[in-house]
Length: 174
Image 1 (cartoon, rainbow, N blue to C red):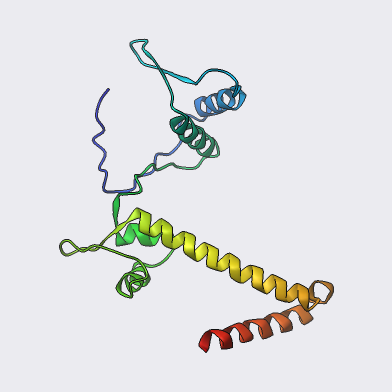
Image 2: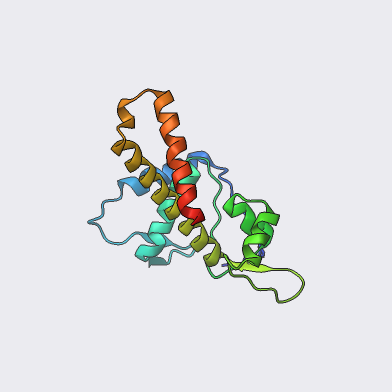
């Protein structure tokens, strides 16, 4: 087995190239009965090793994504990434991310001149923002439903939505 010379400090995606082979592998994984023995990895020398369940789950996810034409990156959650990589993962500009770092919303390290962010901290922040957005959507939906807006015209809905947003903004300002 050869060691990878790929840098572990960058997130470099692996793009699907051989779509026929990936599709064939996907069909094989999908048809593998769960009741059978563990899937096996067969080395070039013929040695067989059972795949642990965690590895098999990762393989199925990777194959499914590559079959769909998506590039794949596998990165340890403990990896430190640059502010640009973190901003890209969050869909933000780098200056906006730096503001989040400086206000303490996301932890970071600055061992030298450049800030580094743990991937786990970026994923945690993204998950928290997702939950907050879903909570807000649930609240707005409940208010709209309670106000009977699902039975109204779009103009009435727009008016009520503006009122709900204004009410939320006032509550947040308090």
